Image 1 (cartoon, one colour):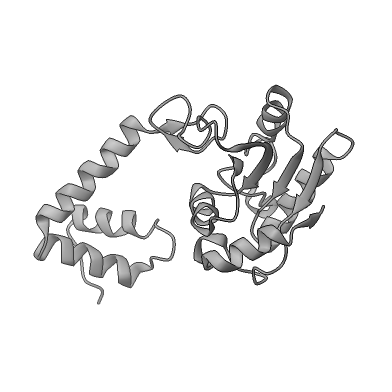
Image 2 (image 1 turned 180 degrees about the vertical axis):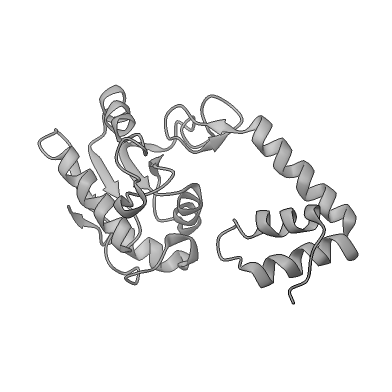
Length: 200
Protein backbone atom coordinates (compact mmCIF):
# COMPACT_ATOMS: atom_id res chain seq x y z
CA UNK A 1 0.00 0.00 0.00
CA UNK A 2 1.51 3.35 -1.07
CA UNK A 3 2.02 6.11 1.46
CA UNK A 4 -0.62 8.84 1.40
CA UNK A 5 1.18 12.19 1.54
CA UNK A 6 -0.35 15.50 2.61
CA UNK A 7 -1.36 17.45 -0.48
CA UNK A 8 1.12 20.34 0.00
CA UNK A 9 4.01 17.86 0.37
CA UNK A 10 2.88 15.92 -2.69
CA UNK A 11 2.61 19.20 -4.67
CA UNK A 12 6.16 20.16 -3.60
CA UNK A 13 7.55 16.79 -4.69
CA UNK A 14 5.77 17.01 -8.05
CA UNK A 15 7.07 20.55 -8.55
CA UNK A 16 10.66 19.47 -7.83
CA UNK A 17 10.26 16.58 -10.30
CA UNK A 18 9.89 19.17 -13.06
CA UNK A 19 13.54 20.20 -12.64
CA UNK A 20 15.93 18.59 -15.18
CA UNK A 21 17.56 15.41 -13.90
CA UNK A 22 15.35 15.19 -10.80
CA UNK A 23 13.32 12.01 -10.44
CA UNK A 24 10.61 11.20 -7.92
CA UNK A 25 13.01 9.73 -5.34
CA UNK A 26 15.41 12.69 -5.50
CA UNK A 27 12.52 15.16 -5.36
CA UNK A 28 11.12 13.42 -2.29
CA UNK A 29 14.55 13.53 -0.58
CA UNK A 30 14.90 17.25 -1.39
CA UNK A 31 11.43 18.03 -0.07
CA UNK A 32 11.93 16.17 3.20
CA UNK A 33 15.37 17.76 3.70
CA UNK A 34 14.04 21.30 3.20
CA UNK A 35 11.03 20.76 5.44
CA UNK A 36 12.79 18.81 8.20
CA UNK A 37 16.25 20.34 8.41
CA UNK A 38 16.45 23.63 6.55
CA UNK A 39 13.25 25.62 6.49
CA UNK A 40 15.17 28.94 6.18
CA UNK A 41 16.80 27.60 2.99
CA UNK A 42 13.37 26.59 1.68
CA UNK A 43 12.06 30.11 2.28
CA UNK A 44 15.18 31.61 0.70
CA UNK A 45 14.80 29.44 -2.42
CA UNK A 46 11.14 30.37 -2.65
CA UNK A 47 11.93 34.09 -2.38
CA UNK A 48 14.80 33.87 -4.91
CA UNK A 49 12.55 32.18 -7.46
CA UNK A 50 9.87 34.82 -6.90
CA UNK A 51 12.42 37.65 -7.29
CA UNK A 52 13.84 36.14 -10.48
CA UNK A 53 10.38 35.75 -12.00
CA UNK A 54 9.48 39.35 -11.11
CA UNK A 55 12.72 41.12 -12.04
CA UNK A 56 14.32 39.21 -14.91
CA UNK A 57 13.35 39.66 -18.54
CA UNK A 58 14.77 38.82 -21.95
CA UNK A 59 17.52 41.01 -23.41
CA UNK A 60 16.26 42.92 -26.45
CA UNK A 61 19.24 41.84 -28.56
CA UNK A 62 20.37 38.40 -27.42
CA UNK A 63 17.22 37.03 -25.71
CA UNK A 64 19.17 35.97 -22.59
CA UNK A 65 18.09 36.93 -19.08
CA UNK A 66 18.72 40.44 -17.79
CA UNK A 67 17.31 43.08 -15.46
CA UNK A 68 17.80 45.86 -18.01
CA UNK A 69 16.68 46.26 -21.63
CA UNK A 70 20.17 45.16 -22.74
CA UNK A 71 22.31 42.61 -20.89
CA UNK A 72 25.90 43.36 -19.88
CA UNK A 73 27.33 41.38 -22.82
CA UNK A 74 25.27 43.16 -25.48
CA UNK A 75 25.98 46.59 -24.00
CA UNK A 76 29.74 45.93 -23.76
CA UNK A 77 31.37 47.96 -26.56
CA UNK A 78 34.59 45.92 -26.25
CA UNK A 79 32.87 42.79 -27.58
CA UNK A 80 33.45 41.77 -31.22
CA UNK A 81 30.18 42.88 -32.81
CA UNK A 82 31.04 41.18 -36.12
CA UNK A 83 30.40 37.70 -34.67
CA UNK A 84 27.14 36.25 -33.39
CA UNK A 85 27.10 32.90 -31.60
CA UNK A 86 23.72 31.14 -31.47
CA UNK A 87 23.19 28.84 -28.48
CA UNK A 88 20.24 26.88 -27.12
CA UNK A 89 20.20 28.14 -23.53
CA UNK A 90 21.57 30.82 -21.24
CA UNK A 91 23.50 28.03 -19.46
CA UNK A 92 25.27 27.27 -22.77
CA UNK A 93 26.16 30.96 -23.12
CA UNK A 94 27.69 30.91 -19.63
CA UNK A 95 29.80 27.86 -20.49
CA UNK A 96 31.17 29.50 -23.64
CA UNK A 97 31.98 32.63 -21.64
CA UNK A 98 33.83 30.49 -19.08
CA UNK A 99 36.04 29.13 -21.87
CA UNK A 100 37.45 32.65 -22.55
CA UNK A 101 37.74 31.54 -26.19
CA UNK A 102 35.12 33.85 -27.67
CA UNK A 103 34.64 37.61 -27.46
CA UNK A 104 31.71 38.15 -29.82
CA UNK A 105 27.99 38.52 -29.16
CA UNK A 106 25.26 35.92 -28.67
CA UNK A 107 21.71 34.97 -29.46
CA UNK A 108 19.95 32.55 -27.10
CA UNK A 109 17.18 30.45 -28.67
CA UNK A 110 15.76 29.38 -25.29
CA UNK A 111 15.29 25.87 -26.60
CA UNK A 112 15.80 23.65 -29.64
CA UNK A 113 13.68 22.19 -32.40
CA UNK A 114 11.93 19.05 -31.16
CA UNK A 115 9.38 18.08 -33.82
CA UNK A 116 8.18 15.06 -31.83
CA UNK A 117 7.19 17.40 -28.99
CA UNK A 118 5.69 19.95 -31.36
CA UNK A 119 8.40 22.59 -30.88
CA UNK A 120 9.03 24.25 -34.24
CA UNK A 121 10.75 27.39 -35.57
CA UNK A 122 7.80 29.63 -34.66
CA UNK A 123 7.84 28.39 -31.07
CA UNK A 124 11.51 29.39 -30.75
CA UNK A 125 10.99 32.70 -32.56
CA UNK A 126 13.46 32.04 -35.37
CA UNK A 127 12.22 35.19 -37.10
CA UNK A 128 13.85 37.14 -34.26
CA UNK A 129 17.23 35.69 -35.27
CA UNK A 130 16.78 37.15 -38.77
CA UNK A 131 15.57 40.41 -37.26
CA UNK A 132 18.66 40.55 -35.02
CA UNK A 133 20.99 40.03 -38.00
CA UNK A 134 19.11 42.55 -40.14
CA UNK A 135 19.06 45.29 -37.50
CA UNK A 136 22.63 44.64 -36.31
CA UNK A 137 24.54 43.06 -39.24
CA UNK A 138 27.38 40.64 -38.49
CA UNK A 139 30.09 39.04 -40.61
CA UNK A 140 29.83 35.57 -39.10
CA UNK A 141 27.14 33.52 -37.38
CA UNK A 142 28.52 30.66 -35.27
CA UNK A 143 25.94 27.95 -34.64
CA UNK A 144 26.75 26.42 -31.25
CA UNK A 145 23.74 24.21 -30.63
CA UNK A 146 24.38 20.93 -28.83
CA UNK A 147 25.44 17.76 -30.66
CA UNK A 148 22.21 15.96 -29.85
CA UNK A 149 19.69 14.91 -32.51
CA UNK A 150 17.57 17.98 -31.70
CA UNK A 151 20.60 20.26 -31.63
CA UNK A 152 21.75 19.02 -35.03
CA UNK A 153 18.25 19.52 -36.45
CA UNK A 154 18.24 23.06 -35.07
CA UNK A 155 21.71 23.76 -36.53
CA UNK A 156 20.65 22.46 -39.94
CA UNK A 157 17.49 24.57 -39.96
CA UNK A 158 19.41 27.70 -38.93
CA UNK A 159 22.04 27.05 -41.62
CA UNK A 160 19.36 26.71 -44.30
CA UNK A 161 17.56 29.81 -43.02
CA UNK A 162 20.75 31.88 -43.23
CA UNK A 163 21.89 30.49 -46.58
CA UNK A 164 22.03 33.13 -49.32
CA UNK A 165 22.36 35.98 -46.84
CA UNK A 166 25.52 38.06 -46.84
CA UNK A 167 26.96 36.37 -43.76
CA UNK A 168 29.42 33.54 -43.12
CA UNK A 169 27.78 30.65 -41.24
CA UNK A 170 29.94 28.22 -39.25
CA UNK A 171 29.29 25.37 -36.82
CA UNK A 172 31.37 24.67 -33.72
CA UNK A 173 33.68 21.68 -34.20
CA UNK A 174 32.98 18.22 -32.83
CA UNK A 175 35.55 18.50 -30.08
CA UNK A 176 32.39 18.36 -28.00
CA UNK A 177 31.28 14.70 -27.75
CA UNK A 178 28.18 13.69 -29.72
CA UNK A 179 25.10 13.58 -27.53
CA UNK A 180 26.53 15.97 -24.95
CA UNK A 181 25.28 19.37 -23.83
CA UNK A 182 27.49 22.46 -23.51
CA UNK A 183 26.44 23.03 -19.91
CA UNK A 184 28.28 19.83 -18.90
CA UNK A 185 31.41 20.18 -21.09
CA UNK A 186 34.67 21.54 -19.70
CA UNK A 187 35.74 25.05 -20.72
CA UNK A 188 38.92 23.90 -22.53
CA UNK A 189 36.94 21.62 -24.86
CA UNK A 190 34.50 24.44 -25.63
CA UNK A 191 37.36 26.82 -26.44
CA UNK A 192 38.91 24.23 -28.80
CA UNK A 193 35.56 23.59 -30.52
CA UNK A 194 35.09 27.31 -31.11
CA UNK A 195 38.58 27.69 -32.59
CA UNK A 196 38.09 24.65 -34.86
CA UNK A 197 34.61 25.65 -36.07
CA UNK A 198 33.76 24.91 -39.69
CA UNK A 199 31.51 26.42 -42.35
CA UNK A 200 27.96 25.19 -42.06
